[in-house]
Image (tube, rainbow, N blue to C red; front, side, top):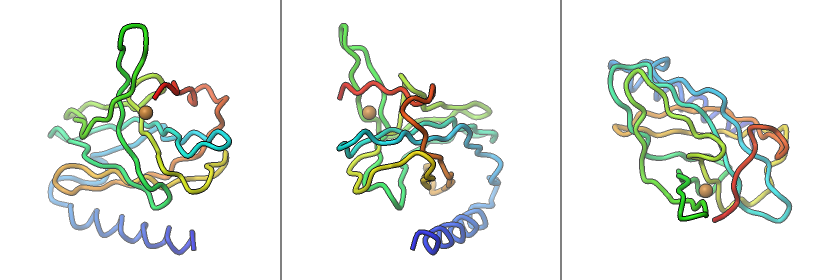
Length: 157
Ligand SMILES: [Cu+2]
């Protein structure tokens, strides 16, 4: 089932690249350091991180992230509220032309919610990034351990 799905999404990815070949080639958007944090026992949420590079000459607006395996993914920012850090959902984010945007531990992050099964270290999760105008890019993110230096995430929701 998983293999069949992956084949389908690979095909979709190729089709998307063909459909949106007008001025924006796949290498215009580069995803680096993508990772998903393993779930804590009993929890149905986790976090994902990545750096998105925009090599094109136009700003890109990230409007949605989804995954065949994760029911709900939100983009969150961390904000100081007095002494506390609080998370807030953001609807979209701009990746500046020729620049990058990072979802990183302690800062903006992707909140993975409503997980039906635990995310286990060593697995890989497909994440699909949707940009304004319909451009889509897929990345296969490894699930990493909570003890990984990149795996820290404040849990104060
Ligand atoms: Cu969050």
